[in-house]
Amino acid sequence: MKIFYIFCHPSNKNSFNHALFKVAKSCLEKNHSVIFKDLYEENFDPVLDFNKIDNSIDSDIKNVIWADIVILQFPVWWFSVPAILKGWIDKVLKEGVAYDNDHKFDNGFWNDKNFFYICTAGGQKENYDLPGRISLESLLFHIDLAFSFCGLKPLKNFIIYDLYHMTQNRSWKIFASLENKLTSL
Image (cartoon, rainbow, N blue to C red):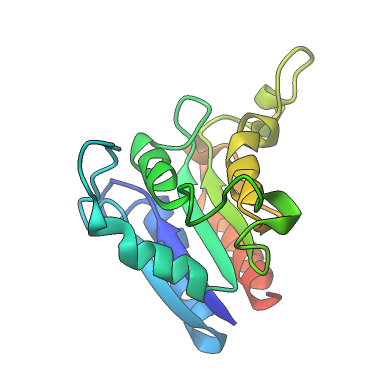
């Protein structure tokens, strides 16, 4: 299987997100053809400017077209994705390439592909599921909708809650769960 993996986290290489990325990278490279993109390491410019031609995303568009599955990995910040990832989505999922009036959702240009995200949240799951609050998956629905609009089919997302109370034992369990998910692709 061909996978395009977009990693989005600015902190040092000792962060939990980087550890997750290393686990995913090791697991995916065993059985799949994978292209990895680290938005922060590449200093990706998320600003969309309609007054200038931006060829910087041409290879990313080609990678989405090449891939069977697109995976996004990011931390949840203020109930959404980091701005740099939102900018990447705005630039790559563009009209005429990812969709047009006649090609969207099931008839989208990329309807032969799947996607999902791996994300971390500092808050406990219960904090998102309280009465009167919206679940984290509902808060991130716009990401699912953007990719679905272009034809990609959503797979089950992998969400890690309560990052601020991580223990070594819990992290090993999460790594094993992630390996199981990625092995089953």
